Amino acid sequence: MSKSKRQKRSATQTLLWLLSLFLIGSMVISLIVVAFPGLYGAAPEPTATNTPSPTPTPTQPPATSIATPPVAGPELPTATPNP
Image (cartoon, rainbow, N blue to C red):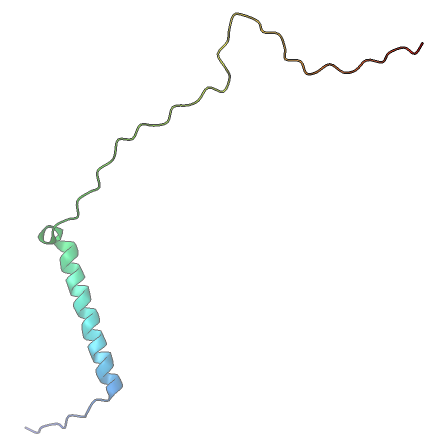
């Protein structure tokens, strides 16, 4: 059997190799987390607060049985006849 010589990897190749391993590892861990969510404790669901809904305001005042006179402004000056 002959031994083949192993070439020395460049810094770029080593960096790409490490980046690939990190990517594969993170994908495997995320698969485990998604497949078994009970192992890591699910986050509690937020509880809804019971806030009262706003009541609509009336658009017109309530009808009354007594008629009110219309509001009048100050009277305009009248012309006086000249003597």
